[in-house]
Image 1 (tube, rainbow over the protein chains, first blue to last red):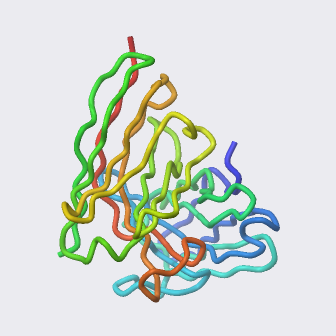
Image 2 (image 1 turned 45 degrees about the vertical axis):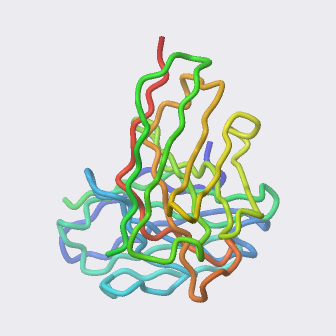
Image 3 (image 1 turned 60 degrees about the vertical axis):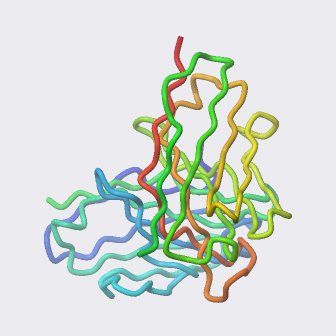
Length: 110
Length: 126
């Protein structure tokens, strides 16, 4: 059981907007920034969004992040076939004194 | 090019030990907090341990506390993970990752993992 809760799957057709939620608590998302990672099969995880809503260089602005209270979300606009991957939210937990990840959401492009 | 390359994985019996290494290049290793993250087969990402740039601050996941030891050698640009009393549920691909920040040397809670190494597979089985 992951400390952060994500839906196990999400899907959409090309061009659609998909949103992935990430639910936590006052000891993690409630007080610390959230990062989002994309993990494509056979590759290393890649940071998509850091510090709730900041883009690393090279990440298209089709990906966007937001946070409110103890929840965060990742939105993918203009869904493309190459977006098929597993997506993870993560943040620091002050009670556990360590990083916590969501269980991951598998995005399928129909 | 910033690069992290892990080594040391393999097959080990339950109760056994293994030492993982991560060779860093392309950045000032001594300035960054480093971490180990693992992924068990068919499962999600799980943070294992982090060590600050100086080695003064070390954190472990509850699942490995007392069994695993993280360390670093800045002269060799290397990160290590000593794993003892291994169990079947430790079977995973272990990756090292740099904790990156807007300002070098920030606290972990403000950081993110970038980049990640390709990982090394640890299999615990009799």
